Image 1 (cartoon, rainbow over the protein chains, first blue to last red):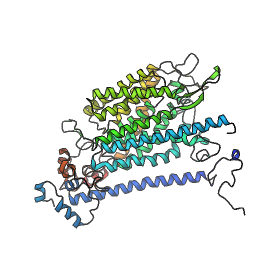
Image 2 (spheres, chains in turn red, orange):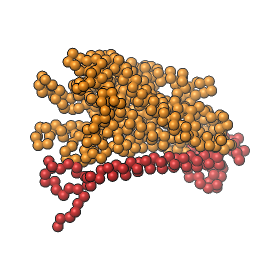
Image 3 (cartoon, each protein chain N blue to C red):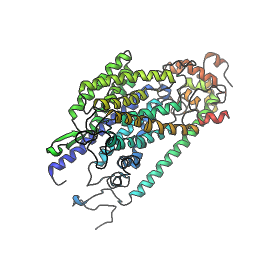
Image 4 (tube, rainbow over the protein chains, first blue to last red):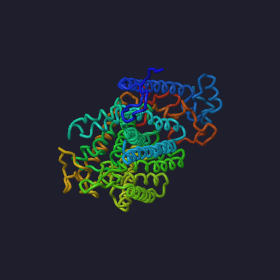
Length: 102
Length: 492
């Protein structure tokens, strides 16, 4: 039974074959789709980055930048009790531990 | 492909370039290792992300338009002709030759070889701007340099038909200018607009050393770049071509301009220029391992413009001079203009590349640059009418590479991004570390002096100015350079 295909159905005469890939003739469509996806990727990346920094600054505002520097990573801090834990266990210089910033 | 010897030649050439591509991958591995090593612990993962995302972004854009630009624009902006119409059949992203095709055996591997050069160009910029640039901003620079500006300069000055070659006699066999100077110029523009890392310069302009978190990684990274550089040199040659002309058939390797050279000759020169660069850098840097290895790289880069033809001892001396110049200029520019190039990329690639192109114009004065193209009259010619290599052509060429195609577009884009606050991360994020709020600690099981308070005093002081305040509100105490959109918004 002969079936419908997407490109080639024989390699018998290789000298006559050009494109080997399926759906030849649709290359411009592939390019348009690819360019749109890439542009979308860049826009998404910029938006995510802006959001990421907004959240980071909000977090540092709550825990204090010096504590964030000491802790060396605060990505898992999501709840206030987590932040309190950082304040309790990590802290900053001794004098600041005694008088933590509001 | 019906004749056995011809088929063997074609398939050998296909395989030859394929092998160079695999070898050149090591350049990228080297850049990643080197830059991550140079970054402080708090910035390692964001630094790595820059290097690894160059791969997909530059690859895809180089497929879409980079490769096309190389074939379409050798005549420059109307200088020796218009856009080459045949470029569509070879390199437009919708061309049948841009995919598996039984009638083509070279396009993909040749495309990949140039693509790896593109990754390298983008990675050169990456190192200079670590620890404070936004990822999204870097991605734009990577695409601009990797898939637009460097490949335009390659069409102009790194193609036998390029207008700079045909008109000016420009010669740059292993890309001192077309990759290194253009990337160095781009990096310089970005670091100027971006500004220094917090704490790099003191209040009186004194330079503070920000040490790599792992000096061994930086050195191993540089050695890996050396390794990949072998593949780059081979990739710049055509392995088998009849260069006999009217005198009869004579097969040889050629440089990218299809002028004769040999793999043997460039092997001499690669190693001798590397050695000259290392010897000089060892002395001028007072045996600093990072700069000794960087100096080796600068040595190769300086001699590369003429390493197809130099004597090995010429290559060694030129490499040594370029290496010493790069080291001295890096520190002079850093002190004088307070420019923070974190890894010396502008010097090692930009200044050394520029210098190497200029030197080649003098040392190779009068050599044929390429076979002449009908209808173009070169400024200077050989007795046989070939465009001749000359000092003026190479000096102007170096300026075009570094300033016109390297510095200017990058400066414009950096200014634009800065205008929208999208160039640099917020100060608080920079201080805490680019990894800190996201990926977290890269060495979670090590209790380092850094985590316990080993941050530079200056960072601690800067942190004190913004802690207890709304994050980002710097009250006029912000360091020089670009300002993030978040910092601007809060301060309004």
